[in-house]
Every structure is written in C-alpha cells, then in structure tokens.
Length: 66
Image (cartoon, rainbow, N blue to C red):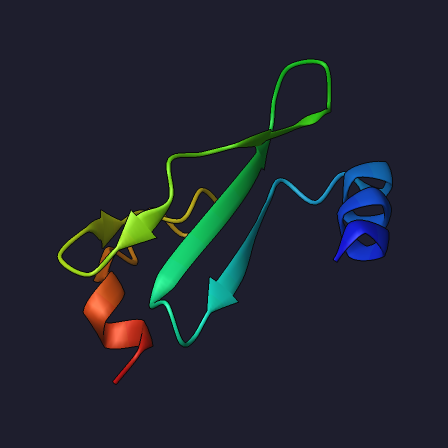
C-alpha cells in the first residue's frame, strides 16, 4: 500500500481509493496544492461519493460493496 501511495503521488494521480471489503470502508486520498496526498474522511455505508475526476458519477458506498 505504501509503495502505491508513493508511486501515485509522484506521478500526480489526483485521487485514489483504498477499498476495505470486510469493513466496507473506502479511504480516499487527494492531492493538495503542494502535490502531497491528503487523506479524506473515510466513507462508510450510507455515504455518497463524488470522485474528483468524474464529478458526474455520484455514487453511494453501498453500491461499491454490492
């Protein structure tokens, strides 16, 4: 996980998600102005997510785990 974090940050990937299937949690990381990842509040069942790169793709966390 650390290796991907460093690689994605170095390549400028604007956002990435880590999905924890058993816990049904999505942890999102977004690049800030300094191009360093900042962890967002974990998303759990009942939350809605708006991806940075696809803002028209609003989805519920429940949909990811169906």
